[in-house]
Image (cartoon, rainbow over all chains, first blue to last red; front, side, top):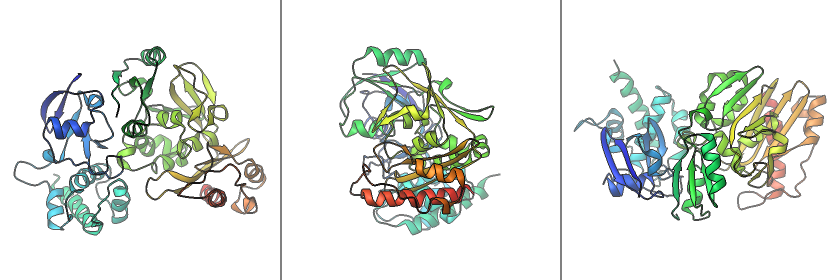
Length: 158
Length: 264
């Protein structure tokens, strides 16, 4: 089996994988990083969004071998120790979750949005969440949380 | 999914040789169609040859009056390219509405047109803009590239390396997206060139096609009114749970008129 090595949340991680192993399976089953969820497994729901080399991608739709040498960030790597990232804090503050299943993907997509657009409007946030489904349909507070999170990130920047 | 051997291509020649030598090898570009297809066990390739990691297939450059886009350029890069936004804004607009942001971060131009999904967006741009598809072996005119449902003029071992899009005088793309997948139920790309108008329709039929009645009318009078009375025939159009052939035929007219209006 091919051996893959990637930087996950700042740490070098290696493992042997079958070529057909998906990145999300490697993260969850080999590395035990179960914060990244699998909702639909058909590339539609966005629960499995992680960052690969800085871009938000669906980790159920990329092979682990394709990420050999890549820099991967999952929801586990977002907070600074015990201190929540401003985007995570905004989700808590605005109750941007109900069951919480979609939340890791929502947060990772939100951070990708802020990378492209530092001050997103409400319609822009809603459009961006095209690929993130919340089956509790709690979008209203998710959108509020992302808006507040983006503002908090802007303030935190020097 | 079924297991396969994985190879990361080091050169285009290397990739071409591998897909020719192995019996059931497939290329993977962005993987946004292929990986889901493999997961559903709808395909069983012996080998996957990965084109990611070939910088010569990436990039956007202006060459005279055309914009040349590398096959492995991702949708997000086309959507956000200042060069494309300036030269062919309709193309940047099209790229910005493919799938969702995570899909646009992976999906590629070359992958989209090589797969030639009947509901993909890019084939409409390639045909309406009268683009040239550049491969590792030759140059193929848009009208000769798309052959039928999931079928192209590509030969075994042939790999799309770039697409050259001539700049039109004006152009616009309008699509009626499937609300779940964002694939086009019907998408119409209208482009006014120095020597005529091209109207390409995706989503409606088994393969992208040109609406030549509309092209002729728009060449005389480039306005939405000029094509108001042109009805798209529903024979041969797609019918599924999302839309009947009759509805798709109707949408061709609506999207074409909106595209003409948007092109201005």
